[in-house]
Amino acid sequence: MLTKKESELLKHLENGSTVKEAGVHMAISLHTVDFHIRNIKRKLEVKTITAAVALAIRSDYL
Image (cartoon, rainbow, N blue to C red; front, side, top):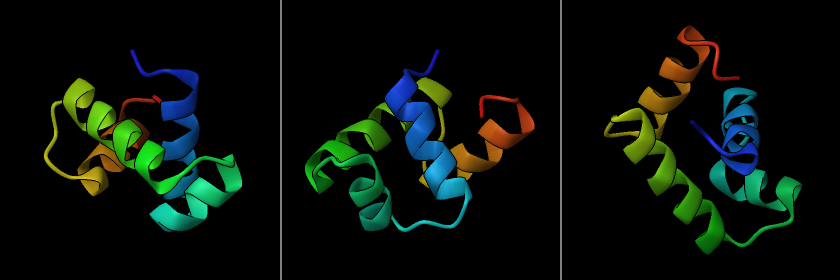
């Protein structure tokens, strides 16, 4: 299960934000964004963040 922050990050990416923009919106550093992205990809068992966003949309994670 994704954490609240991971879900929030995916939502920003789904809405077209870049990784940097998502970090600014969430008031977190790029390092923290990268940390969340690694966790999201691991939890959803995908290789790219684009695949994670697509899977999240299809599976109602968002």
